[in-house]
Each structure stands twice: as structure tokens, then as C-alpha cells.
Amino acid sequence: MAQVTLRKVVKKYDEVLAVRGIDLDIADKEFIVLVGPSGCGKSTTLRMIAGLEEISGGDIAIGGDVVNDVPPKDRDIAMVFQNYALYPHMNVYENMSFGLKLKKTPKDVIDQRVKQAAQILDITELLDRKPKQLSGGQRQRVAMGRAIVRDPKVFLFDEPLSNLDAKLRVQMRTEIKKVHQKVRTTTVYVTHDQVEAMTLADRVVVMNGGLIEQVGSPNDLYHSPATKFVAGFIGSPAMNFITCQLEQTAGALRVRLNDTLSFPVPADRTARYTAHVGKPSLMLGLRPEHITETKPHTESNQHDFDMVIDVVEPMGMETLVYFTVNGREVCGRVNPNAGAEAARSMKLRADLSNMHLIDDSTGKVL
Ligand code: ADP
Image 1 (tube, rainbow, N blue to C red):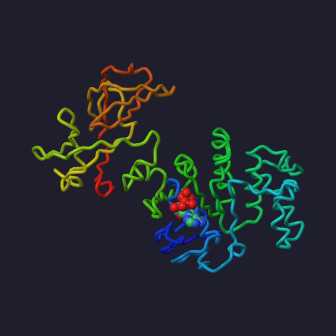
Image 2: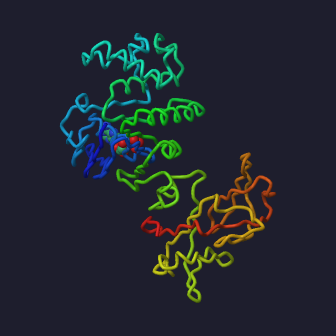
Image 3: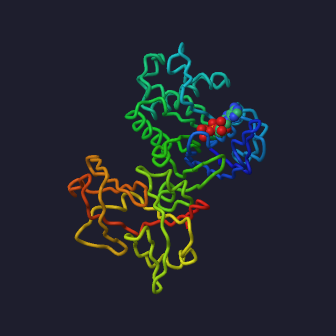
């Protein structure tokens, strides 16, 4: 078990600056997920930790030792890929024990570790089967088993679930979390799927354009995004962004969306926002769940408004409603029994205590 440290790590492929000098401290036993859109540099970062890519600048340390020049096989890491790379002619037991055999580990130690890993992963009854006799989810488990038996300092996962169907992905996600709760090995996991990132990680690292946008617990990122990018990337349906202006009237602030729609800013935000009164390029960020149907009881900072609904999407436990403000589509989440109908006006409620104010010129949440 070990901590992993990245200091000013850079990766250049000829002209492409894939990773632009990132710093990251991963604690011992921590489950870290690197997430971001395609091309943001997350796989490159993982591959540099693994030693599969040389770094162009900076330092990477595992367990306190700088490993920049250490070959992958000597880094004491185990990697699980999306194509499980199981040997087709070996059964599950042989696949799991192969790496240990190469390292001349005593037979009884191998046997004990394979059986223990098989138990953790609930694949004991599959040990005699060949990979082609296994389902996708079972193969995924064997690939994890092969990593576990090596008892490495760090597990590295590169989009391990992307070849599975939607239902199995959700199931395997839970399996991976359970395994980590049992073995507690430091884990770095790459995915483009923000739900996977949120559900698995102790801390999520959101990457964009070769840089780290924000590092935080899933709840931190969701409730206190530092940038518009993170605010829009984490959460589904995504946070609404509406152009707005900040007005000061008699000591109180209002966020004005247009001539007919404005809301008072919560009093506890006044000090933070006053400097931005009158600024151009401001945006109000409000998650869909903070736009609901109106209710009999009103909490502070909740404000009702009327809106013509464009589209209604029943989801079962809730209904999504879409309407247009300042030329942008805005999504709200209402009760299925709230009577939402397309092309009809509806009384909605915005909960401004969960508002975000964004400077669209810098992308920063204010
Ligand atoms: P992600 O995993 O986030 O999708 P990658 O780390 O694979 O992104 O890639 C980051 C950037 O580096 C992309 O612009 C990609 O095109 C580029 N890149 C990745 N691998 C290579 C390579 N072997 N040669 C040249 N460019 C590469």
C-alpha cells in the first residue's frame, strides 16, 4: 500500500501537450477517479503512473520513491484494462496465478492468495473454467483477481467497465467498490463517465485540456464546483446556466435574468457577490432539482415564477420539464403528479439557496 504523488507532471507527444504540469497527492488506501471528456489527458496520466508512458517533465513518486525512471514491472502496480487481456488457453486459476509464478512465488503462497482473491470476488466456483466459458462480468472479476493476488502498492484501472452493457456496468461498479472496501489498496481509476466517478471515488479529479480543474469528494464537486466546467460536467441532467445581471437595490442584491424575471440573492451571499454588481458575462447556475413545482409551504430563498413549458419528459419517479430563458433551454425536476403539460404555463419554484454565480469570461464560480 502506498501514496502516489504527482509534481508538475507534463506529457508532450511531439506538438501535442497532453498533460500540462499537474500536481496531485493521492493518499494511501485512497480511491481516486480521474474523469473528464475524451482527450483531456486522463489515460495519459494513468499510463505515466504505470510507467507505460515516459513523462516529459516533473516527478511521479509511489510510496515516497520517485519512479520516473523505474520500468513498469518494478513499480509494484497492477493494472486492469478494458480488454481484460486474459490468456485464453489458461483457466481462471492459472490466469490469476500466472504473474506470481513468473516471480517464483512459492506454490502454497500462490494457492492461498488465489483462493482468497477468488473468495473476495465470489468466483471460487469458476477457477477451473477457461475465459471463453465466462460472461463479461465474470471476466472482469478475473482481471481484478489477477491484480489482487499480486498485492501491489497501487491498482490502476483504465475504463475497466466500458465493454459491459449498462446493467452490468452498474453491478460491477458496486463490485469494485466492495473489493476496495475489503482490500483497501490505493486505487487510481480512469473513466469518462461522471456517474461512475461519483459513485466510486473517495475523491474525484476532474481533468480538462490536460489540466486538473478541481479535486474533491463527490459531494464537494457536486455542491461546490470551482468552475463552470466542473459545474456542467458533474450531474445529470446538467446544471442550468442562464445569462444574468446582478443588481443592487436598497442594500439587497437581485439576480436579474431578463425584464420579467429576477430573484433576490440569499442574504448570506451578499458580501461574496457585491463586487460583481453590474458586471457583464455573469451566469446563474441552478441545478434541475432546484427548479421544482410550487408547493404550499415556502422555505427562505425559494421563489415562484410562471413559465410556459416546452417539453415534458416523464421519468417515473420524477418528471423533467424544459422551458426557455434568454434563448437557452432550462431543465427542472417536478413531481409526476404536478400536472406539467407541454405548451401550458406552469407555476415553478426556484431554490436560490443553491444558486451559483459564474463569471463566464473566466469560467470561475464566484
Ligand atoms: P483521455 O484518456 O482523457 O481521452 P488521452 O490521455 O488519451 O485522453 O489523450 C490526451 C491527448 O493526448 C489527446 O489530445 C490525444 O490525442 C493525445 N495523445 C494520446 N496518446 C497519444 C500518442 N501516442 N501520440 C500522440 N498524441 C497522443
